[in-house]
Image (cartoon, rainbow, N blue to C red; front, side):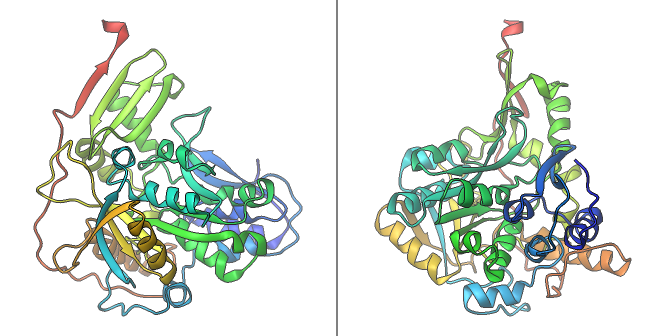
Length: 419
């Protein structure tokens, strides 16, 4: 797979986005190319678009919808949420209501990373016919450490794809063309990180390819402080679990088990190991392996989604407690859909006042990242253009809530070789 082509638009995509370190790995360019000239390849475990063959006719769609270099945040808010934020005041963007919620079905709630609302809402959309397909993140069948986009049409399958994937940004948007043009789906629900949402909104606004753009009916976004290079997972496996070969891994799960979840790895010889979430997230991935592009992203709470969802943390919560989900309803469509899901009992929701608590992660995305963004821009380092400059003054004093830990940083659940 090579990058070189004589056509300007795909060359522009590579030269101004990928080769400048601005690619988010969302996969949208792959998912919309009319000639299927692009594919996602794994570069040290991180998804990155590459050319399959020459033949670009210069349609320019891949460049126009890419969320790597340019995200006109305020314009897209106006187009899809009906108003623009006041950047000085509306720190988490435009929204209509906020809830602390969980899935109405207890099995779905416990299958989720934190409350199961994302899974419950997608299941509700499929079961009511609002959508005929959901685009989600799953693990590659042949390389089970690597996350990729999946298409789900049966709500009963959704719990298999629940919970966060921290090893590289799953290229969920890459399967758009497959869903619409190959599988014949016409009403899609998409869930992803803020960058997946940015691309979906740019695609909808552009309106090309028409059939794919028109298929997007519901956009759910996940709170995201940062994604991590897959290399961080490789080191996690080696340094915490003494697993040196990825070929020996049968399955991994970043939020396995009861809330708040632990990293779980199963090897082909039957060994199972668990790593405490606080240990591997805050002392390993966050400290060393954040993706560079994520560190200059200014969107924390999926600020262009119909509904934004994230972990709800509270100092009173203990390991093993049922999880809860932050729900920020942003659009009119999202408001009507969420109210329908509440009335149906699909989700259980309590209105929440953001004056009492702000989502965890705000300090990084709304304080550190604007600072880094402006510093890098000053020194000529490529950064994405969000069309807005955010201040990075210290926020109000708030209590610090540490994620609860289980019974030790690393636990060997089963090791047949030593039994």
